[in-house]
Image (tube, rainbow, N blue to C red; front, side, top):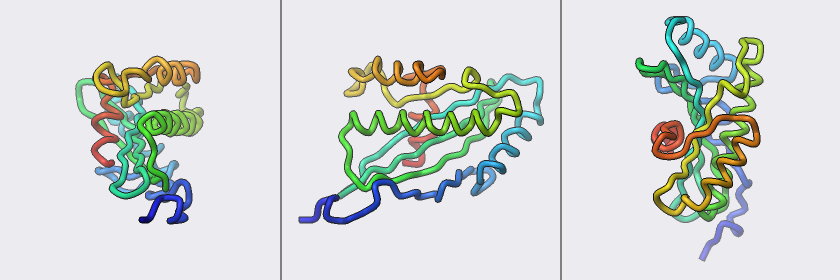
Amino acid sequence: MCSARNINLPLFIMQTNGYFISPSYGVCDLPKLRKLILKFIADRPDSKYRLVIGSDSQPKNSYGTDFVTAIVVHRIGCGGIYFWKQQTNGQRLMLRQRMYQEASFSLSTAYEVVELFAKDGLNKFDVEIHVDVGQKGETREMIAEIVGMIRGSGFAVKTKPDAFGASKVADRHT
């Protein structure tokens, strides 16, 4: 019987090679992602927007775990655009490990996005992180810990059922 330890995979395999994918615009590096988001906002400058980052994961059949992180630009009341990237962990992770890894990927991406848009006036308080934990199910015991980790990093946080960035958008690609 083959276990994940015997397969000798790297811990994380970048499925999208560090690029984000958009259903509307295709493969995007960070400068292109920035340009597309700024154009999306400039098209309707009087609208209100929120920038959401969320991650989701799915254990693979025999080994490993797939993670997807999404960046969502929500034009409140009028839809939005999103970008996602996928990574695979060569180990099958337990639920608690997966939830913390999802939160870590979202935080890492949030810091990347804040740095990317720093010259455009974006800061930590303008980003909302959506985590895939909620009052129902096995993840309810982790809510305080994960929400505390995100808030302690300076970001606003939403949990299920309000965490569409993780539970709807990122989930769509896991």
